[in-house]
Length: 296
Image (cartoon, rainbow, N blue to C red; front, side, top):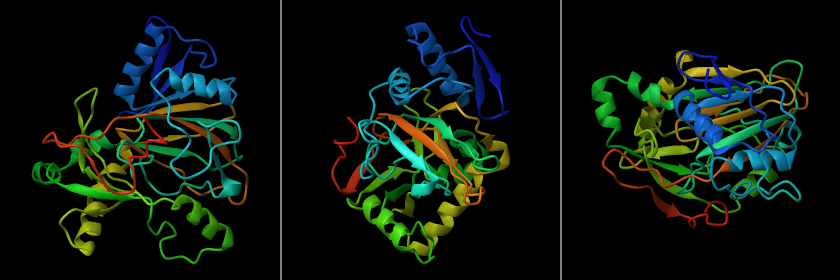
């Protein structure tokens, strides 16, 4: 129990439900500071039964820093430049482990998700702790990973070899309308806590200096530590839920397990900083601009 709200853990390594906070209200600086501290500790915070609209979600997210626009390439919701609609009926089925927008040099600090339409079954969101995953690595593998860099890009085979229909082809055209390739450290030092975590996920397509086959094998091996069940929390959505997660210390995944039922979330992200590796080196743009139209 804190002075203003209750923190109830929902997993041993990741996730806490916050009780006693109205995300639609104006939050005082002390509450915001406590929530940010809880975010650093638990990586993902869950708020049930909130009464938010898009403006309210934008105000809530802005408590934690300057906001990004909706996405570097995908259009924002009409009239809401900071809101990205994640809609199952418009291809919004993110059934691949990833950290948001790591293909640019300054990925978001944090992401907020708000539920608008929830299927009666399935449609959960899984969030993984990449810092405990790093600590799980054998010592020699940790030391090896500390020296590695990976290339992240939005131009990859997200269909994984499957034939795309016309709608999928159009979504891919929009998503890759501007190609980004950025080299990030495989192990990122968290700018607030100083903790180390694996910084990979679905946009990480190769390891710098390694051939393609070896890159994929190594990334798969490291990714397997991230998605160990003990590092993952599963959130079962209800209408009005709000989720806030630290994009610098997590990956997430939305299983496509709800048939053809509708599911709609809105996302607002907080601008982050340039990732820094164990040696103090910062991420570098390889292709594309600095995405300043997306993040400050």
